[in-house]
Amino acid sequence: MVTAETAPATHTPSASEVAVGSPGGVATKKHAVALFDYTGGTDRELSFAKDDAMFIVEADGSGWLLGEDLNGKMGFVPSSYVKIL
Image (cartoon, rainbow, N blue to C red; front, side, top):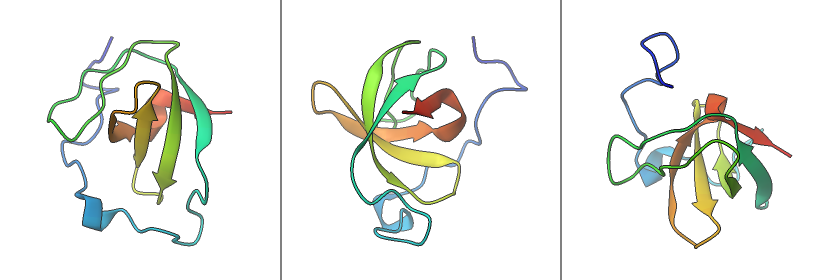
């Protein structure tokens, strides 16, 4: 359950704010699993349930990751809500 203490920042980065190939970024898709349920606050965010599998496409250290669910839908996910395997 999301609480005020665990809720991510309200700013979801735009696609241009996620640096492709940035130092420390994810170079290839990585498998990940959701640690908590998350309901996206905008259409740019990916909603998921605890234990859902997904891919992480990009990571830039901003606290948000570009994720892809197993149906191919892409959106931003809070980095603290997923574990990259």
